[in-house]
Image (cartoon, rainbow, N blue to C red; front, side, top):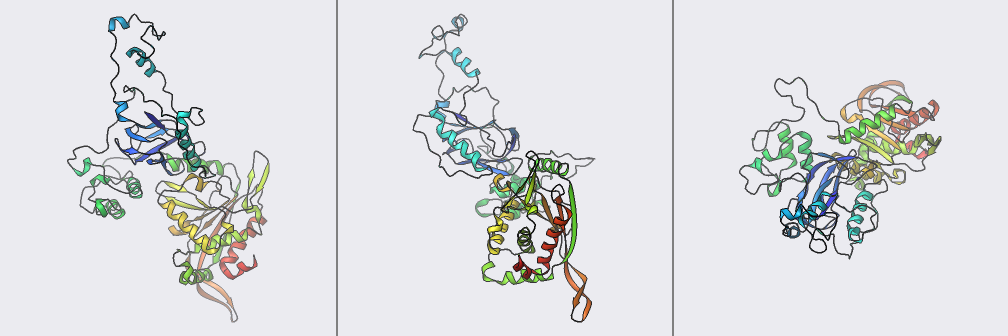
Length: 491
């Protein structure tokens, strides 16, 4: 029998929440099959199994947060686990045995029950990364692949190589661990609430975020599955089947004067990062109001082009391109202050981060090497980035290594704000709502008031190495491109 220990899938993460099991007791799985979905301080992650065999026990229930290194699932041969122990010697004789001497306790090939129990009370030797034991090579290789896949460098290219050595012998059937439920679905379900509802992982996550009990819904999706519409209707208070709904975490119970919600996962990580940045880098914020009528016209023209038919085009795409171009005149924006080395590190690439609000908190995935992409490629990358973030599927490697961030508060109807710089970066740009407003327009006939589309940009930057002149020049360059997209040809 082998126990899969919860790995560190990020950079020094210490704990994770078990969100959803993908297997149940009795399932036969292969190496690298997905067995569980967890939430770390950075994202939702699906973990592959480092072992092949039958699922013997799910050791941690859904919704529980456990430290890295905790056994979460037991996998092995059920017949070996159920094998009866050898007959024990009479109790009177056992009391006289010298347990430290294998020969005195019936050692050799005929180990006594006391000797077996003593061995079981000793810490079990579990496979660990870097172990030299041939019998754990396959499991260790997969465990290393799990960790490498979520590191900033991404997944390793080497395939997992299974060992030809015999597998680790199964432990005795006696396991000193609190009993866990054998199954999440009872053998005889008497009501919908007694059965774990069928739903895809994104739908299951949405239901958890909205506080909807899937088991109480009447599914309308294909194959009897709960659909996204079922969950959203339930959250709005109207279930597809008219069933009673569970209260959401933020609903107020009658007579309750306050509600508490644990700070964990992505929200906990975000809070720590923002506090660290706010009290480390001296922030300066500058604002500019821009006539983006020409940009909005340009967006409309892009939407009609055949190349962009599969790409959702928005003003954010033009702004992203403008930011990348403006950095050519002000490279300090794409650098960061290395306090330990007392150096300013200039980046010759742009990993463009887009702040995304999700039900689990704010995440900032970034488009790698955005400066090397065409406008069409950049648009596709932004679409994929935001879609993955909304589903809660952003991986830690996709959030690592950012060099500059855009936060789009305009989607909430907000004009602007004073954003906090992400750690490891030197500036962040806030993009406000685009509104139709009266504006003074200069023409051949002189100045006149016209209805134009206006937005506000706010740039926060690290004043330790970006002075007012550099910050102002960058912000003015970005605004100039939004006012006249054709001016991008000058960069």
